[in-house]
Image 1 (cartoon, helix red, strand yellow):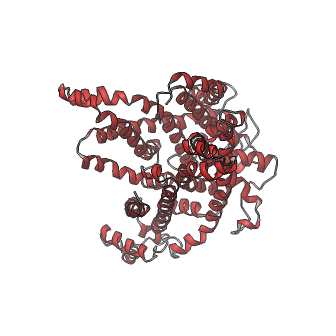
Image 2 (spheres, rainbow over the protein chains, first blue to last red; image 1 turned 90 degrees about the vertical axis):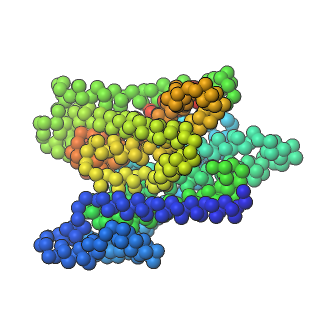
Image 3 (tube, chains in turn brown, blue; image 1 turned 135 degrees about the vertical axis):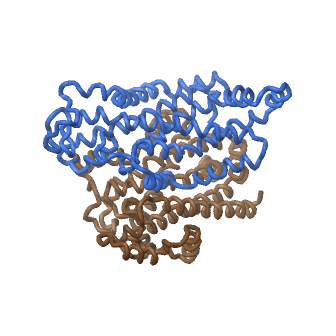
Length: 316
Length: 281
């Protein structure tokens, strides 16, 4: 399969996924208990006012009509207005995205070189002491709930030793002003993805180093450095790139928890608050943003993996 | 797979036994506490939650929690919900997912296969915690809701694995032969295909259970699907966070138990998988 054909097929699948996910989100948020008009009316729940709000929100229209209007709005970048703060949902998302994007970017920046480095280190001597130690830790940490790990780290390094601040309270919106705040959240976010990525890198490197073409490169007299980095690593990296995209799912989940533990005002906090307050347009907007991000990242990763190793990646 | 003998020698070389022992110990402590804990609550030195003193006090073995209940008693009571909900959710997901995947693999109508599997693929594309929060907000609060939600999240993966494992069996030569001998559909589907994939499914169950524990604990921590003062390790971590400076045990012990549970299940599953060379992931 050529790259162009694969790209077109994969793009169509991505569009289908986004369409499907927006539908799921709309149906689920429609099912949220509680009447949006009653929520807004708040302290003055007289029937006239509720009826007025209902008309303003188009709640008197059938669901499919509202669904189509909502979709049309999304295409124009119109996410609606928050029921609670009466501000455009897009403003709210942009406002709280900074902290989350910073966390995710910092995590990825540390994660990729560290995980690949550890994986290659473990693959250097398969079955050696270092390999055993790395893989035992990786297997163990793989499914530790982020919040439990976060609390243990806070108790030890934040409270007992006092090396890092236990929460981000009082830091303000710009987390970079106090980098020490970021250390514990980053450690927590790294814990799970680093396990899967380093194990995949190790397995890929071990396979690639045993393969015919690397043996051939050795017979041609290529140095170990070039064999490892220029020949074995690209093949080993293909599944790693795809797994990296899957970790966006984990990162998003982890970010929700980490923001809750360390009191960081980001998208996760915004989502939990919006669901608790039954703020339907905000929940819908946040879910669409998160879902579209996931689909786009996976799409990009699949294309990169296809470019790196066309035979294996395209077979999926 | 290279066969049994080389696997075992490699297993010995990579020091599997100490890892298995560590895993079993790490798993046994939280599991025993979770299962036998509720029976120990009535004993001396342990408050049962009814008698309340001052919050975040040092009284008792591990002090008191945010409403003044004895932490030791809460820990003995609090493991059951995590383990039971996760186990029930895994069981429910298998009960629904395996027949769906099996049916999709066995049917010779391609559209039926697509109709069963495509919607599940869509669910896979939604981040699981997002789905959890959305579903939990729409349903009444309670352990049953949590079981159903976690099962729904685990369902697509299980159906996919079942289908993938059953496909080669369902369309292989042995199946054709059974069809020629006019064996009934039940004999072919249950007696042959379902029996053939049971090892793959068993090996996978450990991984699914870990995923369920993770989701249940995280959901409880975020306050989804449980009462805010429930005796539950994850809820304890959340609610007692405010007193971490005064009374760290109320937070650290349940968090450590959850970590031990996750690490223990992982190590044990990994060792069991490695010890069984014929099981391919």
